[in-house]
Length: 311
Image (cartoon, rainbow, N blue to C red):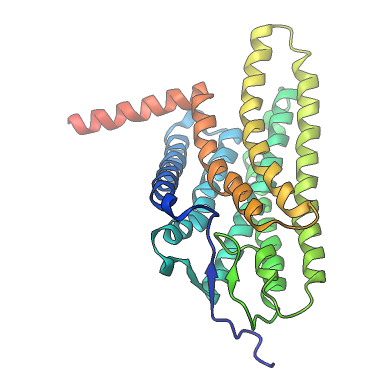
């Protein structure tokens, strides 16, 4: 067959659940999505509005909030549509390509950004006197730009290799969004090369980033133990614990899905909820509830809004 794109429409199977739970799940995931977008928007507004937060750590956090806001938007609205009606499960071939590219672009950029953030905390805690010169504004922009470009290249490779295959038969994707492993099962050609690329391009890269993050935090713990006052140690530990919480919720499910041998469709879809739905919500929750500077900036922003409305 010469036409490599006979399939023009895919059908997303959605989350595995009993039909009577449609309304409940719709309400839960809609609330999570709204909180995710509003929470990350608030962080972006606060960091932009408060000059005290114009530091490397909050610069990277603003990048993370921007990514998480769109990372959730790439997958959750379509998942909600599958819960509303059967017609919402359909996704056109070009839309599926766009969703796969956007998902891996934002996901891999976030993966690289977590690594950069851990490196930033390592420099701040291990080399406090040299930190300002080592993590200058130019260095921050360079690191952030590198993460975005790396994520774009990573996703372009993954998307191109996936959709160069012929899709001529079944069109039901066993997932609630277009991801490479379930799409490859529909291809009408040998996918062993693609599976190897997924293992290397996603699994090994994610594992490498996670290893670098672990090494950074081992060094940070070593530096924390050198701090003489217990109050100082606790303050530094709290700052790093929030980052570690989000990192674990993002990396563990990714490694589970992309590095383990074999694939169980229902299990993969449930695990994917953690890094596509929960992690983007955790970012504003963890970084606001556990961060005094952000809390103060939020209160300051609220006071400005109230004052402007009272005029």
